[in-house]
Image: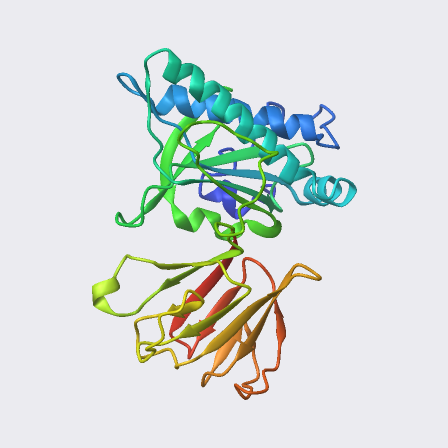
Length: 316
């Protein structure tokens, strides 16, 4: 009888994201260290420059999706909680150092995005010690992204290759809110981790929504949360304050949601005033606008308004 194969093997993608050169026999690494992850991301940053740059223009990935075995992920995060944020800071600092060297050499360093994005993911088909990478340029939302830019090292050759693959490839991966980080891209390439925070520029979260109307096809409506509380309303909203996220569609009630950041515990909370609100597949009870009923709103949650309009919240 043929050995049981996973869906990834049957569609020919099993080896795309696995970097171990030996699929049997040798003992695999059982614990990934912070230095392993840092060096791995730096290698992929340099690989992207070599593969994507042309003429005198330096091109590089802005989104880094690092994939682990589920057990490796849990062991790494549980024993070193918060370490990934430190790795991200040191990584971006090194990115800037290298990009400054290219600029000093007369190369053109122009980003394809205004931010850096880092994600940790896991997949059950990964074995202990496997580590994989997917990279994206993160172009502006004016251009619809049909495919995902993926870099992988086949076990057979050990040579990095880059392909465009369907977004459906990501459906089997598990994403973790504590493994998601966004940092703004700084054009002068100077990373100052000790610089004081300017409260006027500080942002707490980012919201994205895709609307059903034809005029918004392939486009996202984005809102940056700069206040402790945000009101999400529909197209009948007339207020213009900075804490009003107006979604231009009749499918959203006015107002529909109130979202606030509780600084004492660092968590977001949501109250619903619309006809129907689904938060991560669970219905939120409608409450009176004068007496909101609050429920916790995890980062990277998906909110569905009236069964039509989806809203995602991300850490900013």
